[in-house]
Length: 495
Ligand SMILES: Nc1ncnc2c1ncn2[C@@H]1O[C@H](COP(=O)(O)OP(=O)(O)O)[C@@H](O)[C@H]1O
Ligand SMILES: O=P(O)(O)OC[C@H](O)CO
Image 1 (spheres, protein in one colour):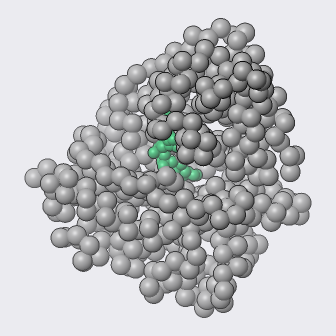
Image 2 (cartoon, helix red, strand yellow):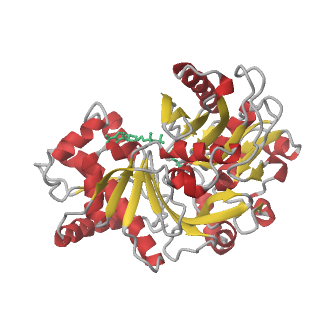
Image 3 (cartoon, helix red, strand yellow):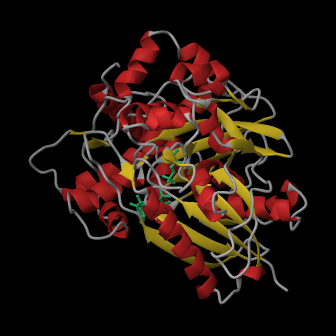
């Protein structure tokens, strides 16, 4: 009988379920947007119940669409928006507060205090992360301190914490499994990436009881089985990875020095640095790329909070066009933004600036600026931000980067990909399977199930769909990027 892998990709904008065949080809996709709530300036929340219910419904829908019964599925993989923080009742599974999303900035003041108190070095040394509201630790502390009875209940062992992977796993297994994987753990700011343990000193600093935390397993592991009544048969869950690390796997970036950049709601550039954690001197993060058979492979990461979200804002907020694909047509028809720059620091600036209090701005407006220039500047901002990351990565590396593998919802935009190659002055490669995040976790399931024997075998399944080579003259590139750096200077708060 043919064997299939069901990959759950629970992203910031939408939940997706993709069923892959053994060759890593998608056979069906089911997708549903999830509600974004912005209850306060800089706050971003999701409804955990909606996350679970849409995921479950999409699993069933995907099986039905592919006309498969659950016993054709060798295993489920979960990949997820990372850092997003959920606390739930250990008995009922009911969340005690909305999911505090990775973009949420409510703990910016507390993060400033931690920096002033001199904790940056300790936190960076243990976790590879800079102090920023982005990561789970301060969000978790906020929930415990601000939701009625939460801290008392946590101390009594009545609550559980997890990132979205853990929360979904708990529900899929009917409360049997409270696990996460090393890549998700590495984004909490509570996990020591060297010892591969929860860091006791950081738990004390953030006042987090250890009973709240999931056990950390490899990315390919026995995470448990789906509870009886969900599907016709119980399906094992065999793979978990944070979505950006899953994309690195899906892009087959298994060799030291290989880099991918994913363009979804945000943009995340990750470079495989091999067996040893490499500390960035340019404000990038050190993180775990994947952990297999107990052995961690490390990475450096540049994280940009707003990429595709700029397009969403231009479409839904400013209502400048009806669907994301129109942005490409507008940019194609705009030969020049004539000095207009859009800095989409809606939720602060991520790498390499790490300025949670910065906010967005549009510069260079004149009487003849129109929708075309603003939309094009929005797309260009994604490329300029990538350039910020690439330069930071180049400065950290001995060997220059020559190729960037790209994926995510935005990379269908050919205009954007060409401008990216031009501004970065390197070749941009787009793979034939654009759903690399889901594919990456499907590979993990396949490894655990024994369908694939090695990372080399997986590499043989990666195929190029199109490459974009830089054509922009150096002088123009430098002039455009210089204008971006000037715009960035003007939104930074220096916090
Ligand atoms: N043709 C396009 N041009 C530019 N942006 C696009 C295009 N199509 C989709 N997007 C953007 O891509 C994002 C969705 O990508 P996706 O990888 O699904 O995101 P996520 O995983 O964060 O939910 C949205 O922000 C959307 O605005
Ligand atoms: O949901 P995405 O694809 O925007 O990814 C979110 C990241 O994991 C946040 O770190």
